[in-house]
Length: 194
Image (tube, rainbow, N blue to C red; front, top):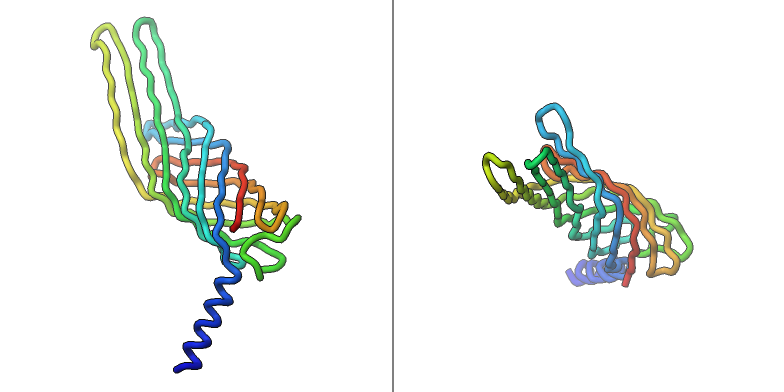
């Protein structure tokens, strides 16, 4: 019993020595496409931001993130009649990554090495629709709606480490935010491992 306990403690110490917490911030391009169900898709691009807090284990990483996918806008004008529509998407996600390292013995990157990765993301998404309009016949109208959904996504990219702790991230992603809403994006950012 004592030998088994000692072996478990020793293995957990070895495991924790190869793991490291990290923070990462990414900015980039986001394109959101909504299937209207009326024979056409509405899509728009915006500026997206993501902040992540994670933990690296040799070649694997897990991270929790908050992502603002941006806002879509649509305006229609015809004489004295107008309609303005905006849709915002935000998300809280949990991601798992596999890093294609040449040496899997450390949780962060060796200096001066580019490390490709693939990732899978599960998320809780929030969409908010705001609409306002005016017509001489009906007057002014304002509507605001919110909806939440669970989504899934995938990421591929790479990180270049300038030092053992500091790296630059580039990547592309796809997220299915709602059953009728898809997001495609490209991001760049920085990562710091502790």
